[in-house]
Image 1 (tube, helix red, strand yellow):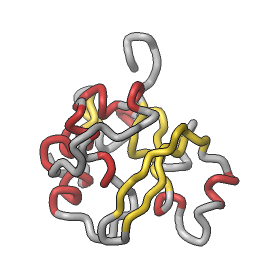
Image 2 (cartoon, helix red, strand yellow):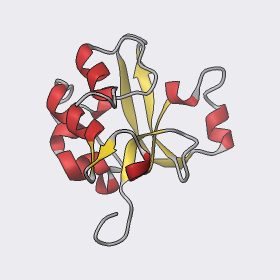
Image 3 (cartoon, one colour):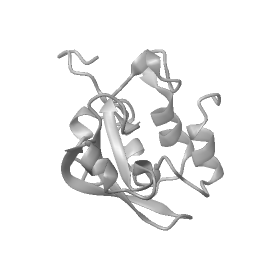
Length: 143
């Protein structure tokens, strides 16, 4: 929780999490996916999720939801380890802040700043050829 009682958003959420919203669309290729950010967020409604058919919604959209905190395997010591690992172990993919609509409440932004944002466009749930750094960051068992 923040000092004002608002929960930070996890920018790597699943569409079935409470209050999930889509904030990006995944483009690029299966080998090199890239997130394009929406002009606003869209609730992860049944109608939105059906737009992804016949593939999984996480292959088409990037989702955010209130951070599950201690209910998440990536969370520990009051911080998101996934965001930390991305910011420190994955090469930057962009040199300018993406036009992201969740930044003001994003846990990664508040904990890692620009470093997380420079890597965020390549974070996708269904990555079929992630490099070593992305795979290591996504592994909740890695330090």
